[in-house]
Length: 108
Image 1 (tube, rainbow, N blue to C red):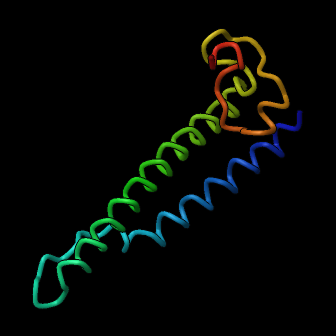
Image 2 (image 1 turned 180 degrees about the vertical axis):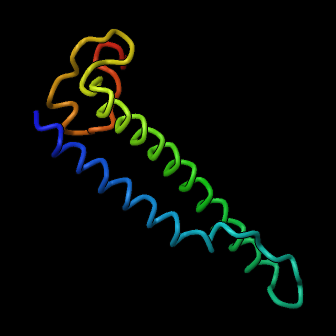
Image 3 (image 1 turned 120 degrees about the vertical axis):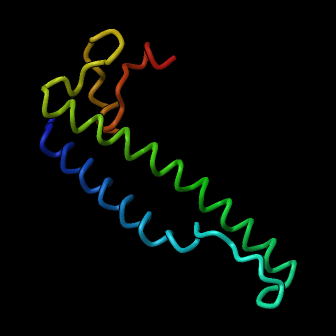
């Protein structure tokens, strides 16, 4: 298992998520309730889009937190070991998702 390659993969994903977060900031902004500027249906559509953007941002934030934790494990040399049972995580599992923190047994 090439830890540097996995670290690079984590950093690339982190950068991608941060860029998406920045681009979607406007979509998450509060919706104006000014009736003279926007009709009721347009406002409802804007509220729905805002709600979906906020849900996506929450998922993005959770993934960023997982990535940060994985990068800390890389630095502390705990990367690749289950945070629950301290057993080695299967390399295929880590290569699929470098931010994974548990072995398959503890994930269940």
